[in-house]
Length: 118
Length: 114
Image 1: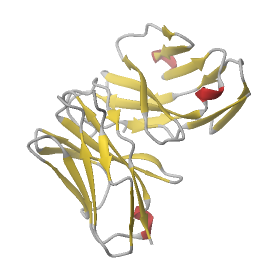
Image 2: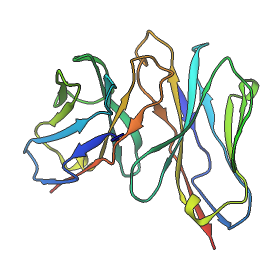
Image 3: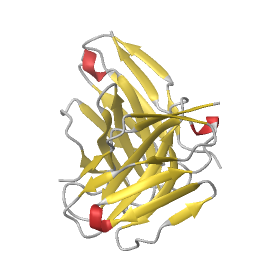
Image 4: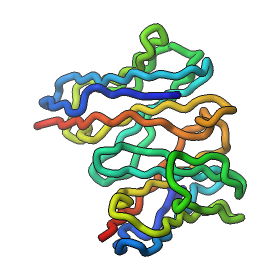
């Protein structure tokens, strides 16, 4: 069975600090996909990034960067120079390949509440 | 381009009643997913529809059901409502049924069962 763990329930930082959100996953599939979503107070989940299990290249997009390491089953997310607008709940999610009972669904971690203070 | 839309925004029902929630996917998307976000339980997968067929369902009782219409919009029905059904119900859509396609979410329907 697949599982996603976000051990940090809440993180509080001051603006301009860097912050890393941890995500550890479990799956028996060799082909899988990892996602990060952001849920601002409005409630709508916003897609941030997708990584494939066969592509461990790290990615940077503006102030956001992602570190995918298959050896430790981790997919961590870093926000550089955080801003108040980054305050939200961040979810890591896993999707497995075709076939099996997990097909088609996203399995989410419990989420990390990030609060950025001015 | 319009995103995923859901209606109603809020729904208040009493125990034992039925609730119907609606979702319109992004134009061109054929897959629709339903998730429940209950307090303290995180986001739980409910149902997945693609091309009018139910493709997968999560660990929810049969009183949670739904359908997908020819225009790919979808309806989630919850019968015999219980207090613990109170939650935010999120609908998502994706371009095709393949797992690597990101799912785009709507704003949700907040269901309150009294």
